[in-house]
Length: 245
Image (cartoon, rainbow, N blue to C red; front, side, top):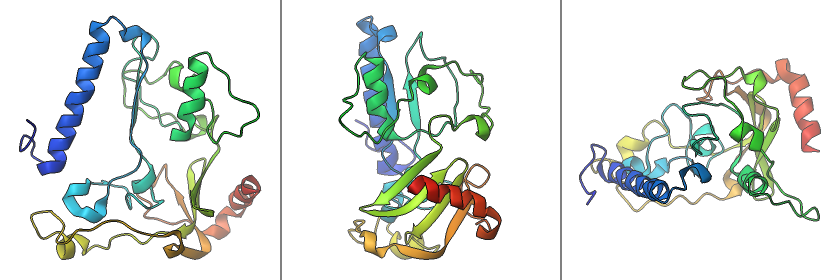
């Protein structure tokens, strides 16, 4: 039904099929008159699998993809829809993790967290349901306003802390190997398909430990192209180390 219907090949066809499936679910919810009683969340779990060429999608301006801790691997789209409750057309750059979904939905449903259990996520209900000053626009709030719930996010590979997002900064203690500029020419010459059966297998031990933390301002430099001088951000790094403790 969806084969060869898009201009992006099999990957684009799959996006069309997914879009159709989401539409069918939302249509059914509306037909059952449950639209204003249903919160719908659409969120990605990781970035594109760029190792498998055009089949894996594109990370756009972001560096890296699935299996890395660069923005291309961990920054994903998220859409929340709840007619009558969530303002329509709003855009937010608030720092939220998928780990926040469980405690947030539990609170919305009227439940309470088991206090004897430590949860990684934070309840971000106010951010999710609150009024949005940017309703109907594509304006992004000033970064200083966006860190009320999450000042910091930790990115681990097994027990190794690879990177930290602290406010507008991203600090890499370890970095992943990512496909070089010749990757597509060398591995994707079959009309955008992999020349071989490529499957991403990268162990945590393959990460490169940095002699000095690699710092980016991902608000101004989301592509993580221009590293900052660690000597000029010693106070910020000290605060990050305190948070890690």
